[in-house]
Length: 359
Image 1 (cartoon, one colour):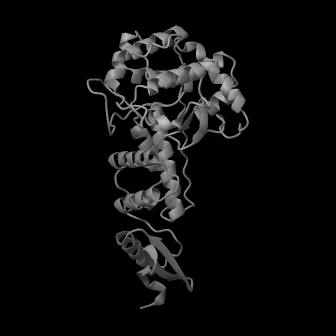
Image 2 (image 1 turned 90 degrees about the vertical axis):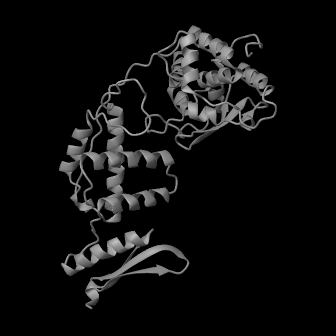
Image 3 (image 1 turned 90 degrees about the horizontal axis):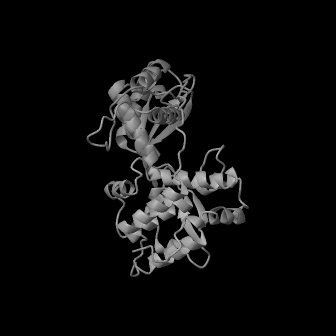
């Protein structure tokens, strides 16, 4: 066999994965894969490429092999959040449904534009949908999420040599007109807290923490009693969404009193909440408070709006909300702990005075 056309697969002792080897330009080349199937597929394509006299690293993969390797590669990536991979794979399922299972080198700017056009106004979604309602077409935010996921996928394909770097893709997000934020008024917050207290002590604490800390619901639900430092008046938090941590988040003094009262009812349990958040109970609470249109996430927006209304610097609010974009700065402000304390203390007046509010 002509050594120029020889391609082989092999394993290396002590190193996981399967390798493909070949000669190109009198030099030996090698590439690793997570599975034998992917390695053999690459080797077969490389043989055809060499036999045809085609040089270079670009190898076309069929759609199933492409997705399988992408998933395995991303699962092994350090720092990748599971939700990020899940959302990207959903986008690729939509691509397969609307465009078809193409080979990697068949992906062009024309196909990208066709996909975006097909997704605009698309009514098909995967996962949970609210029953009994007309969900309608996808939102611009969802479309932009698909655009971001496709861009990530294409960068990976180019980096792996499945799409030529000479192919130029243009993917611009669609401009989304942000709805104006309508925060709850202080009176509405107090009414909601009183209604939540009637439901249960746990629900009172959930709503209270959302309003006076700005934490996401997912971050509130995973809190443990040990995360609350009563001696320092802080809560140690880590964002479930971004994986980033603020460290110790300052909490108003009267809120710490309420947390202390609530802790006394837990009988030594480790988790802050023994029950689980359910949309049914939340709907009951907000309806009883006369606030049927608000979402739980609106409490986070209320937190940010109330700080802004009280003159708190935008940079401080951004840090408390743990925003990670360049405009919503995070780690740039590293020496503002006293300012953070002063900021959240301004919300102390929202907490009911009597200590017997929690049933």
